[in-house]
Length: 355
Figure 1 (cartoon, rainbow, N blue to C red):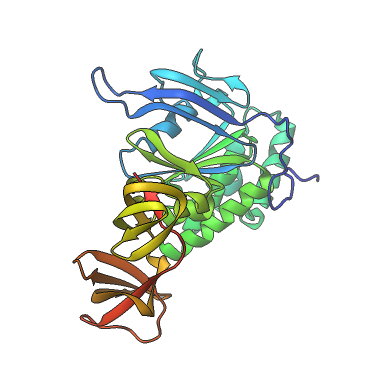
Figure 2: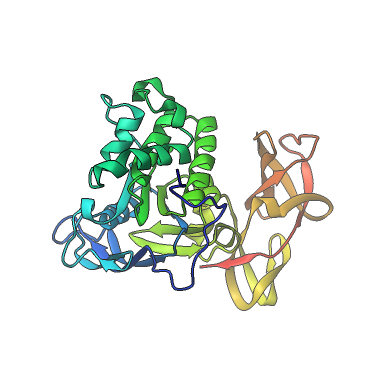
C-alpha cells in the first residue's frame, strides 16, 4: 500500500503553494450593541505551518476558531480556505475542508477505533475508505488497536483516534481546540509531542487554541497572543518570548520583571543598574527583564530575599531591591538562600522596552 502522507520531519513548502488559510478583517459580536468578541482580525497560514492562538479566557481565540470552522457566522470580514472564500456566500462546516479536534474528542462509543475513523470518510468512494482509514491509523500509530472500543483506550490513545478521524479526509486545515486539557501533566506532554510529530509527517497545517503558555511555545511555528479580540503580538515562539512588545505580552507569556528606567540611547538607567537596549531610546521607559536574565553575583545591585519557590530544575526567588521594588530570579544555585539573605544581582543580555 502506498503511504497516505509524506514521511517528513518538517513540511516542504513549494513557493507557489496556496495558503491553507487567509482571514481578513474578521469581526464577530454576539448581540447588537455588544462589544466585538473578535475585532478586525487578519491572519494567514502557510502550508504545513503550526500556529497557536494563545490568550486568557474571553480574548476571542475560540470564537476565531469557530468562525474559521463555520460554526459561527462573522459580522464582517473574509475567510479563505485553500484559496476558496467560505464566508460570502457562507459555506457550512462540512464543506470547508477543515478537520476539527475538540477537548472532549467526541468519539462514538458504539464504534470501534476503525469505525470512528471510517465515519469521517463517508464522502469517499466505498473502495477507498478502508485503505485510507488504515493508512491514517498507521500514521498515528494505532494500527494494532483498530478493533478496540473507545472505552478500552487511554486518554492519549483516544486523542489520537480523534486526530486520525480528523486527518483521514485530508483536510486543508486542522483546528484543535484545547485538545490536551483533559490529560494529566505527563500524558499531556507526551501526547502533545506525538501530535506535533504526526502533523509534521502529514504536512497538515493546524491551528491550536490554548491558554497554556508552555504548550504554545513547545507546539508552534508561530504564536498569536490575543487580547480583547485582537492579536497583540504574532511571531515565532522565541521571538514573542524574548522580544515582547507590550506589558501584556511580557506578563502573560512567562514571568517578567517590569522595571521603570530612563533611556539614554543604547542603554537605560534603572534600579537594576545600567541595562543595554537592543534599539536606541530616549526618556522614561518601561523595561521587561526575564527572571532567567538575573543571577546572583559577587558584584552588582544589592537585594534581599523575600521568598523562594522550589521548582525542581531551578528555584524562583522573589527579592526586594533597595528602593523596595520586587524582582524575580530563576536560579540553579546548589545552596538555597533563606528569607532575609542579602545578595547582589547581575543582569545578562538586553532589556526590552515595552509599552
